Length: 265
Image (cartoon, rainbow, N blue to C red; front, side):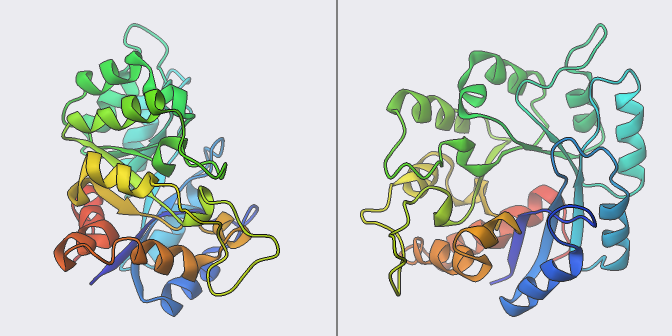
């Protein structure tokens, strides 16, 4: 199985530099990773440099200031520099006559959108209408749609049903991360498994809605280091799908990302 990490942050000035990420990837036999720009950071120079230095290991999902009048031109430049995707929020809108201009530009450039936001933002009717307006644009909902807060239970059914109902759109995908995002930790930490039982069924709900062909794993490195850690975020998540066919697990932990982000196989 080729493992691909679809959600990593790296920076010289916040979190960790790229060498730390590569160390964890090597230790856990992760072949490639998708660098996801931090919210509010519109200078993508470092990510671009990382991809150029390690082209066989990394690709870049960038951030631009969509409120600028020249946002679409900025996105074109990022795509020319090698970006494979753009990070947006469900409520991102462009100034001017077309509020969806930056979304349409991403679609036209053949990019994917990694979508971050509050769970309520994914569940509103306006986001579904946006998806319908850009039918060929791959949109990846991050962090299980942010119904993943470690409250030790399942979020309100009306919210997650509406959010996961977006699976009716064939170009909508979902990212899953480590159990530490939505499980309550035992205090003190108990070995060999530190979370309270039962485990909330959020991964099962995502699987039922999207299927393995539209799910992808991402570590959320380095914030994951403050939770269960990189290795456990991978292994314990893989364990939750141990009863699935090998071909399906291969999609969730690598194959879907290859298709969406056009990665080297």
